[in-house]
Image 1 (spheres, chains in turn orange, brown):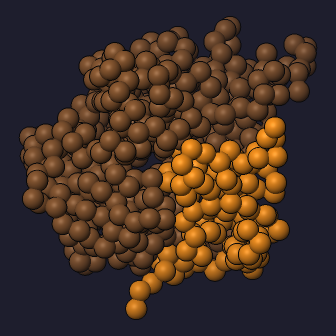
Image 2: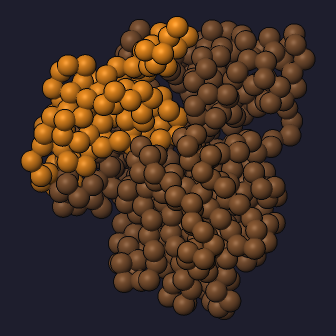
Image 3: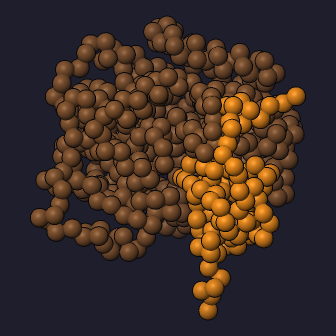
Length: 104
Length: 460
């Protein structure tokens, strides 16, 4: 039987909570980033690109590449690999620059 | 918030930027020698990328199982807790101003919503490195992640990008990443290394002087053997397959110049790919001020420093990866050495020797994993070079071959490659290579991270 990362480090997390991803509840543990919570659910993409509409998610995982941007609590272009998945956080798949509301 | 001169606190003796191995070692050493020291770091916890570890809420009883040399880190954090160092977490320094004293401007908080200005008489740059990427068809698919990113997400978030992860690229990080992924329960069907490891044989004396490095390598090797991981040398992932996420990769043999050998392609099924081609020193805070640089053996640009780790700018020191990538042991030695020089304390001979041995090993490692010029043969016209601005190989080649661009800057102006959010951190090496510029210069980044306009307006 394969072990998990949590088993490897003997993790006993504090009670978890959920965040909202496109209307779907996603479990998260205290201290996990939004990107980590999404990976734990097998979700790898939460943005589409501006030019070709291609799916993207976390790439560098350390805040350098900006591929993991999403709309978080209504604010566009947030780095999900840095932001904690706090209780009640709302994450929305970002289409393009995520500022369609500013279109004229 | 602007502060009038009368309210301004006295400048610190030393500001250390970056709380990884080099910065931690420097800050605690300097404070123990009596300096008033501030340590600024973008992350929420000390350790940098190398000692990245789970948040307390995840309750990890054994974080050391995802680390090499964990006791060195706990030793440093123990000294930090007992020291007078002011540790400012989630402070990302975006520019450094020279004057009578240094003024460091930082965004504050994970969402960069706050701001701070810190003044100090001397600055030590310990900002580490980020991964070098070389593009290939399919590298923008979800499930393709950087090797360091897979490590970071695992070490801090205890998560994996998939269950069957190919590890590819070049450099010692690949073995460390594969070893962690296997330990954490992932299947790793192959580690695909573009170099051939024969480069290490050219430095037997250097290897013999660094037995700890051999033991570290042997440890990774044993774990990979137990995990039935196959190491494919002189090979590269030349394409990632899939429509909305990666489902497999094509691996090909490379010749000595890293040119794919036709007819050697084979497909490996996987649901994730962790890829990287060594590390790039993160030095823009210094190069924007005109600090001199050197070219390392694997063709990266690092800060030029003297025996006391002084950069060419008065009052600015550097330690660890910013002086050329060489790993945590070297970074700790250099952090301590720089702090001693800054404090005017003697440098023990044993410390200097340890540093010199590790520096020599870093040079050997860099030469062994230097990218060959033939890698561009695996590109296709429609491969994106710049991930942010979605600029294709065809567009970059048109700028070079038809519009006469001869360097990255002109390619950027003509195509937008490198003009996006990451400021060319992901595409920089590839664009420089495709533009044919023989001279490698530091990337220009006047602000080292995006800064809200209100903070810029307030920054004076």
